[in-house]
Image 1 (tube, rainbow, N blue to C red):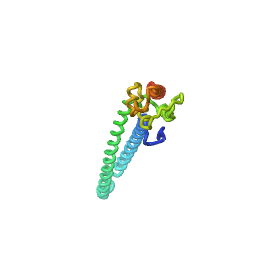
Image 2 (image 1 turned 90 degrees about the vertical axis):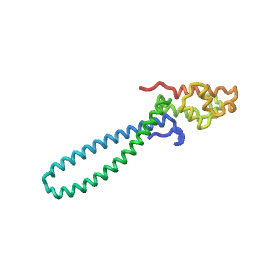
Image 3 (image 1 turned 120 degrees about the horizontal axis):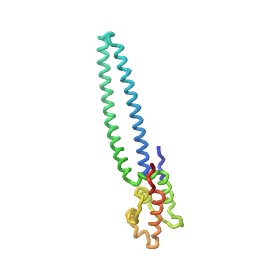
Image 4 (image 1 turned 120 degrees about the vertical axis):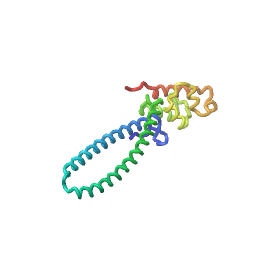
Length: 188
């Protein structure tokens, strides 16, 4: 399980969500493989048992088989209901994964996003100047990895009233941190 870099479960970055979903889907696939293998072995053992019992006390077997069939139907019904719910959950996770892979999160890693968040959380740039970003703005910066000033203006609420013309370093610092931490070449 991934630790949330912000320290607050309410502030999960896209790159963290993507990493979590990939991990979760991998575990789900492994569990499905184990389940299929176990079911195959159980079915094989049941067939062997039926073959051995063939010819022995057919009357008792018929009564026993009716009970077994009823139980098997109940089990199959429960399995079908569970599988239906799991299919819906898998579909939701798959759609979320496809969306996140279409965002800058695809080329990011959790460690670099954490580094960027630490920089933004300090609230000051490398020269000690105040950035005055809200938690929401920091999260959006990480999720969008802005490359252009217009994107930063759209992320920072009331930018013009919060920052004067002499504070243009805010845009430059955010773009530099985005480039340094968030805009990396995809790993192979």
